[in-house]
Image 1: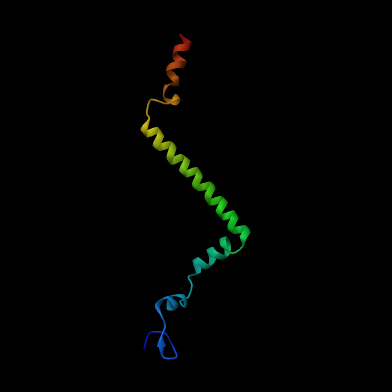
Image 2 (image 1 turned 135 degrees about the vertical axis):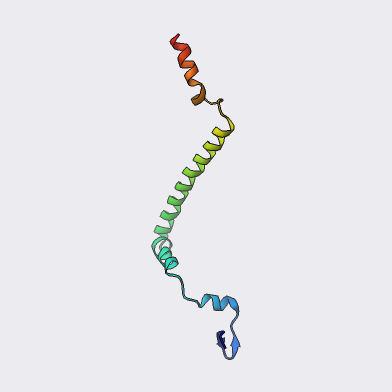
Length: 85
């Protein structure tokens, strides 16, 4: 038959899934980023920094969209013209 067996009994699906060959890309990612504690921590810190920057940019974009014309960057030209007069 097509299923794996030990002592004539079929193996459960979760064991059969673990016996399949591992994809090369996952092996490469694991070996290069997660295998050693130092590279794992560096990967975490870089990922957290990048995520923080993009989260900050997204929050600023949402804030700017919700508050047009109410921020200093939108009205400072009015005060610059008033002080020149």
